[in-house]
Length: 505
View 1 (cartoon, rainbow, N blue to C red):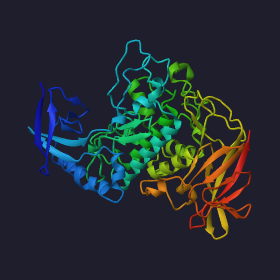
View 2 (cartoon, rainbow, N blue to C red; view 1 turned 45 degrees about the vertical axis):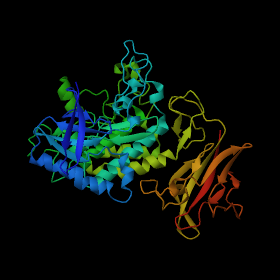
View 3 (cartoon, rainbow, N blue to C red; view 1 turned 180 degrees about the vertical axis):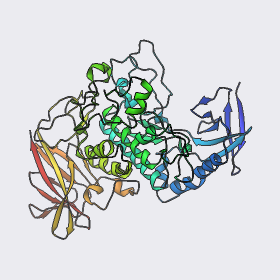
């Protein structure tokens, strides 16, 4: 029998929840739905001390206000599932949290192909479902329905959103402290992500962490010193620097479906000691360029983990030059030197530039559907080994330091049929982030392959100029993309020049 309970929050608002005697249980909380299922009331099982209550109070008031009640704050409501009130009942402290959007719950009724069917309809789409290759493999009896898996492009969008949300948290002086695929929900069908379990946020020097993190995502320095007392100055606790490690691991796993540190090297015959060493003091990147001792041993790898576990067949370089550089910084330079780790902002920028290098695979049966252009004259999809056929335009972006003089930006835009051109491609002073206006989100042109020629169709650009031919390209007209063609996209400050490069294959 269910009872509807009414509770009054600290600000005087009343909330209701349904108590059927069997709440959902998280790691530290019992969770009850509101009657209309628009929010949950989550009670901590353990009594919260003064410091814990003070942390919660700051999270639902000060920090929430700092992020959501600022210009553009509405944007973050999709990227964070942020508690918005505190309640007390029967000596227990609870928080009011909005219910996740429907897209973050599985709709497929069963794990397809299971010998013993297991229903996952209604379960939360924790990132762990999508970071492991086995749930993608049809050889594995509990593999996910293909409709849930999205494609590679969508995982780039997911990573951009996670990096952006972490960047915003860090800018507010907050660390998540337990950033992992358990605390991030994702939807590969739409390229969406939202960060959950916000109630454990760390404020350096004020609110220490409650936990050291989730295995797979704990930074090496935290793992290596976890045996020390909390008061020991040598003990390393979760912080913005450890969030950066967790973020790098998550991005790597969502793109390559393997862990960057779990390889074939054995440090100790005792499983627990080996785990502590391989994830802590002796952590080593499985794709380290000069030390191959931690490469995954294929004779120990399950068939359901292939081809992803084979780093010679699916190296991290398939993610493109910008991400390779950051993976090197995260897992080589910064693995044991936290100050060297890439920031969330660096990941966001590199991911956005890599999206501009994505090219659709011409094999309709390719699982990943997209690949990153590898800057060769013979592009080939690394996921299914299908070579690109035909002429491939690449736009090299330049910007002007002073009038009449242009400098290369180390930024390219790949062209494909019905690819859009956006304001942030046209002008380097516009950034594709949460501050975009509605107008800046609209495409200004698009590319088509028409009559065996690649064309750029100008939708709204008022100063598009064909520099090579010395003529303007009016709105609602198009210009052919030929090798070495120079197009000035905008004559405003920050306007870019593109030089067309045709790859013939």
